[in-house]
Amino acid sequence: MIPSRDWTGTNGVVFIAPARIAMEYGQGSFRRHISKAAAAGLRSDVMNLPGIAFDLDTPEDLKAFLNDPRKDSETWRYLQQQQ
Image (cartoon, rainbow, N blue to C red):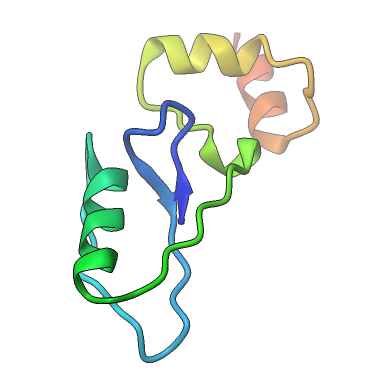
């Protein structure tokens, strides 16, 4: 499981068949996914991957993204052209 940057949401989940849990969305989904996996007897591995963890959900997220020093994405270039 890959948490969001603030560790409240879930930005990525990979299951090894036949393991499955019902997907959750929104604030607190990461904790709910971990709990559901444990209740189902499944092992959860957590990976902190900054690129995948970065959401653009709020104006603050957008500001942080535009100020990110890694300016190597098509999204970043597109947003710069829109200003």
